[in-house]
Image 1 (cartoon, rainbow, N blue to C red):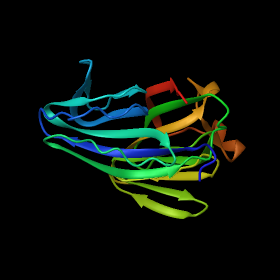
Image 2 (image 1 turned 90 degrees about the vertical axis):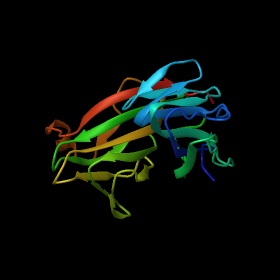
Image 3 (image 1 turned 180 degrees about the vertical axis):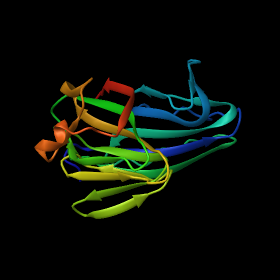
Length: 221
């Protein structure tokens, strides 16, 4: 059971060139990130690779001429089942689901989607975040150290960070590394960083990671 009554789920939808969802996905707070190819939503708005859509209404998508791989994050009731997309040339799988213990369920939230890119050998110094989220690796390799241990991730693999637990991230020594994440954060952080460094001296040290923001929008709940 989660403290908020919600869970965060990441799905992967693959669409062949020109394929479309047979039925709209039901209304949920949702981010659709274009990992590969391109897609259009039902209102005709197009999204190219490395861009994202956010909404809370039902939505259907159609792939562009090169197909699409869509990473889909959904904030859903904790007793819900994964929503699989259907249609000719469409496959849909669940990548990761995690119950949410924060932020405060009585407060206002935002849903943030951004990407974090590291140069070769880059690292994120030990830190926490002010809300939970699911990350998915797009490029390179990364090792995530937490109090529970160390885990090595490859492209397409996802992991959950609850927020308050300290995390150290070590990127690949051979290539640039990039992951995309969706976090659920207190509304007062809209437009502001959620990171907090465990060692006060690390606040002033140069940081190797670079951020690209896609979505930072209020959640309906």
